[in-house]
Image (cartoon, rainbow, N blue to C red; front, side):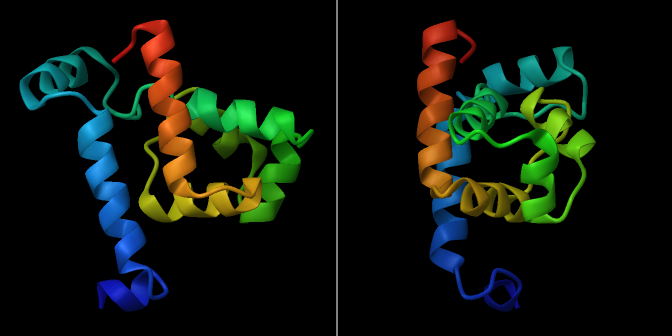
Amino acid sequence: MLDKWLGGRVADYATWRYAVRCVSTHGANMAKKAEQANSTRDAIPGLGSAIRARREALGLTLAALGEKIGTGASAIVKVELGQRALSFRLARDIAVALGVTTDALLLDAARLAERTGST
């Protein structure tokens, strides 16, 4: 069932889940941060900034990216600001629209979080 839902990309989903665990820091520290943060915030530091950087580098507007993935500009803004949790499916759709893999977005996020000290 999971394979069908992901369109035959179980390996990509497994990679995504592993990367989320790696980027999200260690359990106790992450739980503490989650309590302090708004419950709808994204647990992957830097992911929204990485998406915004890729979008701007391609010269895409919020509306154009939203149109490519079938959502509105307001949803993209919330993702970029970390105010909307990012499902695997939405992350994959955004990555495809930006011409990269979900792995590339996660690596960008990790680098941005490391630079800003938000891990």
